[in-house]
View 1 (cartoon, helix red, strand yellow):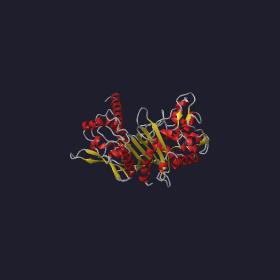
View 2 (view 1 turned 45 degrees about the vertical axis):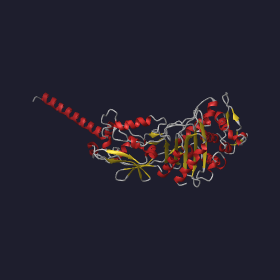
View 3 (view 1 turned 120 degrees about the horizontal axis):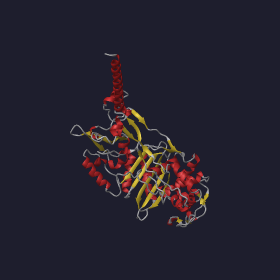
Length: 484
């Protein structure tokens, strides 16, 4: 050949070889490192096609299976099963033909074996798509306490209800109960048509049983929010013994309807003026905390303090699993701040958020990051990941936390929660929130226990006529089940 042709052929071979190498490298990268993203893409028509052909690992708590898979009679597909699902569905969620929620969603790839933490480091295994057995998700839930909470909420006859219990020292979520609830076995079926029919029926129910009431809905917290207002007063320099404004009625600057104390307080301590902060809190004097929110320390101070506890943010409890944000109004209108400071108006909170408030009081002023997954284990039993315990926020100093404990203990000793004396509740706060144009109230209790060496923080909300103290015995039953 002529030299020019030789050079042209050589260049062509070099270019072809380079393109081949580049193509192989791209294929290797896509198959080895982008496979999961491609499988999860909504553009992947096969994304949902094979989801029931994989044996997912179990979700367990206290050594008991809450969710697991079994091979069906066709020998090719797996059916997901759930234990006492109405009790545990706020934790497990569901695995339907279309989507997954709860821990089924948060740890989806770990359960189906596609999580990179379960794969070997051998690149060939990744490229050929070798099937890795699904892992086990160990939840933090205390099974006995979860059952006790759900049964107590059911027995209350409330239209909606929720309870959350947290280990204040670690942030582990021990109870997350919600009513009305649903059975995940009804939607976690192999037939898409059957699952859709079940979803349609559940979604048609006005109280939305698929929605976790403990984390997914917000409610006016009533007087439990006074815990945050009282802590803002401590941050502003007051002490538990400081004399604070009380009296039968308070009208915020700028007009509006006066805020009064409960009719049952007439002639009591709230009518006196001034009184110690600890007494105003124990007796839940509306006038005291409305004044604090409207004037001293004022809206900005209360709003800032609420934010330190987590208000205004979605609080994460597992990967891709978080609570709806709670809210306190940031406003220049004292009348709105006054109403919000007694847990009414536009102040709303999740039970998880209010449990964290009680937990901070108990835990030396620190809010631990709540978490729902204790361990992730590979199919061989080895621990792949442990919970990372960390401080989420520090809204109180040690001294302020100690004084807030005194305030909450006073509620049980001599205040609105005195019916709980002698129970496992060491300290707490009642709250009764009016629901506009409805015959029921949002009845709250937050607190800590057991009485000896308190470790756990609880929030209970039941929606029914009556007062917050009626949710207190549910908190006591939870502490008892936790070992109170």
